[in-house]
Length: 261
Image 1 (cartoon, one colour):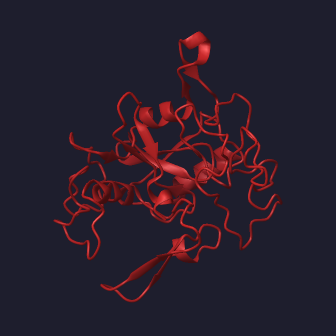
Image 2: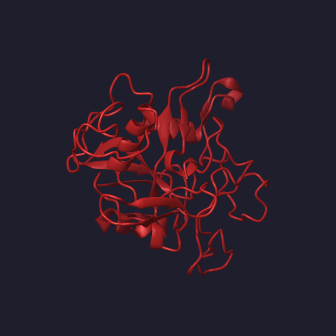
């Protein structure tokens, strides 16, 4: 289970044996979880829709297999669409993009888009030691990692707590859509891949134009996490939440690394 042993992103530990595993949170539980597939995101949406049941959750009729998505044990295709009654779901790319960059107050109230999800057209800083300074994000600047403020991240957890940069939210109040971890969206790309957006802690660029994809089965990546959309409160636009973060094919990875340099 790399998410428990990769020191750069470790967030959950596992003990026990098959059929009786026990999981526990490492640290404060406020960092995003990585090494998660699109299927993990869909099953988390189902689990939340079904009241977050405890105990054994397994099999094609389990609470992780129906609700927001009808999966029925699918672990290969990943082309399911959200059901009409979904209360939690993987955001569409348009929902993700609007929550990150759109600001209805721009252009004299006509609305418009920022270049960064920190409500700015200027590239953000990356210093977690001054988290209340506006326009900050967890990514690399000139080879300097955010958490260490050096050019090395060896043996150090590179993630930051959700919302650490308290004055760097989007206009809709979402945090960390610039940097920290890429997150899945519901776009289908090249007929079989699913979209990811946002860049991550090792990226050297985090603008709105960063876009990539991975097979929905991809769960071996320290840069990808989960962000879910949920039904909004009255008069509020669709809300995005960090699903895994608040609860606790390297082909495209190589492409993302190339884009980020």
